Each structure stands twice: as structure tokens, then as C-alpha cells.
Length: 94
Image (cartoon, rainbow, N blue to C red):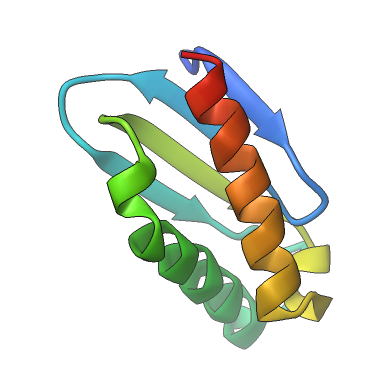
């Protein structure tokens, strides 16, 4: 998916890969740079929560969200604002 992504957005908390498609496919990735298993799972839960909260704004396709280490230290509101900004860029780039 990474090599075939048509759009890539970098933020301070995550990287969003997008490829246009007919159905929703989603992947959440948190590597060992994030920390131990507890921190990686928390990072994926945060990304999943933001994705589900805003799924009605998304167009169908394949999404991969890769967490960055700063995601764990950020507040929910900061991450939400960054997510919405990345989403706005995604929708504008159609």
C-alpha cells in the first residue's frame, strides 16, 4: 500500500497514506519507535477513534495511518485538530 499510495500527508502526529478506491479499507500502524506494546496500542486506538469519528467526511478508498512518537504525548484535542487539517487537505486534493 505504501508504494501504491496516490496521496501522502505528513503531520507531527502521524502520516496518512491514501489511495482512491470503491470501498473503505483502513490500516493503523504503530512501530516500535512509539514504545512498548501498551503505548503502541494506545496510539492505534487514538488513530482509530479519530478515523471513526470523521468517517462520514471521508471518500472511499484505502487509508493507512502511521503513528509517530509525538502522538502519545499530544492531547486528544491537538490530535483532532491535526487530523481534521490532514482530512481537509485530503478532500481538497481530490
